[in-house]
Image (cartoon, rainbow, N blue to C red; front, top):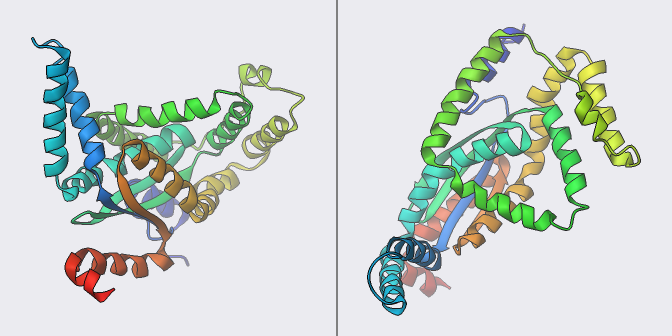
Length: 292
């Protein structure tokens, strides 16, 4: 007999919504900040300029003050402070964005931080198949739009508009919602009439997405759909998520004018990379150059 009955396994899944689930694989996001001076300069310069906008003085004088304060800050803020800030916000932001944009529930946490190096642990725990198919349909439509690239850049900027307090409140709300979901029946919904009317019946890709939606939420038994969303799809996405996460992370850091080494690895590769990074950051600079 398995160690957990079906009901107990489901309860265990919900209890570990934002924690590691030992039955699922993990992905590790490694960030080593190598130079944050330009990013700090731009951030401080923007804030000082905004604050001094209504102060008395010439535009040239206020610009000089903003430049001096920003340059001083960029030279004095250590990289480990930047990493400390990232460690507190990245996990919450990942959970929030993955839920709202992809319909995925992920567990994310900072599992290690030292000097300018941080490691985040990511685990996909649930995938809303209906949301995933809807997202696929939207991406197909947006790829045909000439404003697709612009929209993606705007979405990246929107990430920073979510305050930490909002993220904390959202996470607490999600924990309550999944507890209620645990106690209720698993309900699926078909496409509503409005969504059907918006379909492009001459686009075979959209028709294929519609077919999959009907297949998953009308024809398949509920138990199969649930197993797909809680086990099969999370495992599939977990195995394919590395390149997408790294691409997203590199774009975000570049947009903030921060130089960094990033690596998104599975469990099998993480140990080798982790200990190599520790050796690198713990070896004095002069000693490391002497060895080479």
